[in-house]
Length: 340
Image 1 (tube, rainbow, N blue to C red):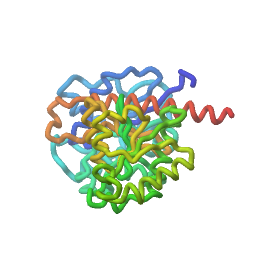
Image 2 (cartoon, rainbow, N blue to C red; image 1 turned 90 degrees about the horizontal axis):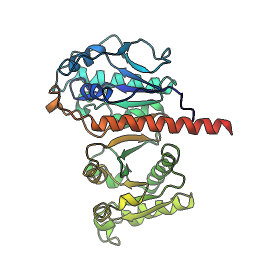
Image 3 (cartoon, rainbow, N blue to C red; image 1 turned 180 degrees about the vertical axis):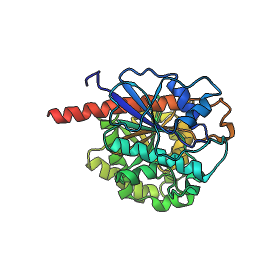
């Protein structure tokens, strides 16, 4: 890939009453802008509000369009004429709706080719619902906005990649949501992303069981026998190297995930508890299967510390670096395909 390609990373503000704007500011003070244009989606006043407690927020350019951006730098792009005044720690409809408007703008930038990736600062699921957005979170909204239903939530750290077969649903609904067709779709999406986004030629994927001891031969549940194993057999026939089902507790306790390129866990907490226990605050949420690159820090809005200037930007920095890497990988892959 050419090294002089200008990579444009769009960053949505997140909930203006949470720690999103603060960690965005702290991120910008740590990164180098070598052939990188950062597009901050939000109104300048929001960033200035949080920057005032640290140091002046300088070196940015206000713009009303991403089309004309062709040089490295930091640009602020308001998502419309309406803004909000930050109220740190408050959960509200206006802040929730504003956060989602920023996300929507970022998606449009990427879909129209004006940005290579979207980095989303944390939103509040409660606030966005109050603001009129009837979606569980970023992942589902991204799938809806991009028209691609086969998306996959993947957590990425230096030592582990964990994808989730089911997402933000109640634990009581997990077993009923699983079927071999769903797992096969998840494995296809995961395998394709590992190849295209992460540059892994022949990925190895581990698949956890759903029940304690992976069902123990059907004694503790039949999902492994009736759902997971048939999906693994289909995956093998499709040329996907997926192994399992492994008892989740022993698998993660023995650090077996480090021997695989990725793990497909059956539900949210099964995958995220071991992931967050080992990521040292530097984990990243990546949405695989989208036509755009999207990353996010692996934490929430932290309303309890908003406005106190104590939020750790480590996960946000890691999310930015991953967005940059994946953007370059996809650009390289597209250029290679076009030259064939």
